[in-house]
Length: 66
Image (cartoon, rainbow, N blue to C red; front, side, top):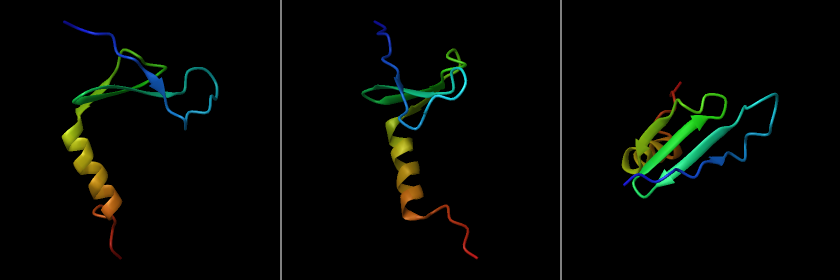
């Protein structure tokens, strides 16, 4: 059974001209991202890889040492 996703706009999307918002919808194990100007194009990611990415970003794993 398929449920409709509840899309929420990012608080960082402050308007601009037209539909310039990033939107997010979540299910228990999946996050869905899209831009409001192209609602048929959607990025879907499971929560575990996203959590690992965010941990790497927060820990500085992707910083370029100079």
